[in-house]
Image (cartoon, rainbow over all chains, first blue to last red; front, side, top):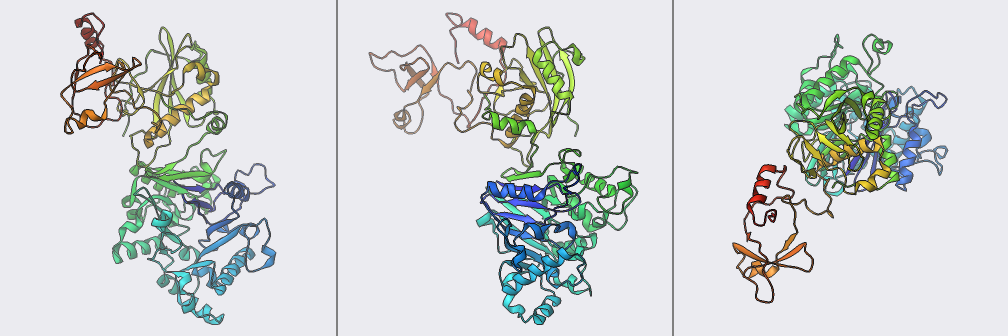
Length: 377
Length: 248
């Protein structure tokens, strides 16, 4: 059995994949909780992660992916991880990253406004220069230029680069029960622009889990916009004729339930999807599919949060709820699970019956400790 | 699709009119926010029981082995004196036939067999929260098809279980892979086991006065009769001599 854990970190991303063979993959990191605010319902992320690593008697992740360099995807990472590029980020209590996954823009981007983002970039650049401990997604012309400026031949680093349309070499269905197919970034889109747009250049993958011959597919959509989704669908469905690469049982909804990942107009009560987005959700979602919004609770109509321009957007949520109903699926929000006033990590187990959202009560946890599991008569 | 439900037994009452201690405890627990993934629907009463109807949210996989819904409505029946485990009925009209159901006079609503251990042992640990959790857990692992554990005996094929017939390996071998149409039985050392023979056993063994005919059926893992055909059973018992000596 494989396990996904989405952490309640507000409108930000951090989720972990625990593979049946013990490997651990972390997607993004966002320690957003204000420890001085006792009413902050967001989890203590480093504590949650350390508890799990302690139980597994590990001090490392096999892979940590930074899908792009927005703060809600790396906040606090430089205090938690052991970074190779400077001694000040090394210490016994820090968690090591065996392989760092980043889109090429993390290496090439110059205009990073936050210091912590620059440190992550520095770590990625260091690993790429060293030629180990990193996988870079896509190879835009700018990556070649960066290599030339830094005295590296891009050709010497090709084994560290995976292009869109390929599967990452770190995992395979035969060996690990999972493979990761790369949808974005793709070099063409990145080369079109003078300046990197992080949401356009972020890492989008399809994970295909295999348990006893049964596949469960997950789309990891990071913060992509509807324009990028449109391009991904055109390339994959129309160009490469591989629509199965966009099928999903679980989808990490893009950009914390932003309407801009569905269409260009927010709508009165519901965002209308552009055609390729509509196709992706309505046609490619499997029965009882699970949609996860990594965000604060969905605002109620007319509330202050509803008027805020930042996601989550109520209108977008209403579109995803339509998909939920259509697929007899589940639309889940990390800061609403299981309750808005007491969010907990959202756990999804994957086995030969595909994905199951865990709905464990406090009572169940107590009962499990105090008595053997009952058997049916 | 909207589910249709059977009515639970009894007349609808207010929670404060409940009489049984465990029913009162469960109604209170379901009315508070303390129990997650469960909510009280209604209370009922019969002459000898309190009945609580409640909805439970179940962990159901995308590809369930049995079609359990994410929300199931159940009725728990509490009787006084508190000597038998409270019965739990699945009220959904199309609740599937699954392993570990109790045999009742009528097949519907289906009755969930929640526990293997005797109620005298269970009573000491019974709490409303644990009871609700067990219902949720039973439904969840039924949905996954893992309720029946490998070390548990198969459910009996028929009601009125009188023992097991042991088929010696030479029985089939000596008949070229086919079972004989009729078998003779002798008693083993305990009266719960019988040894099958393809021909009348020689003295001093005594063939039991039981007629055994052989039928070929598709494999059936769990119980095959799901309701007691009471009239037929009574009729059969009356026809045999001496009355009541019939068994299946």
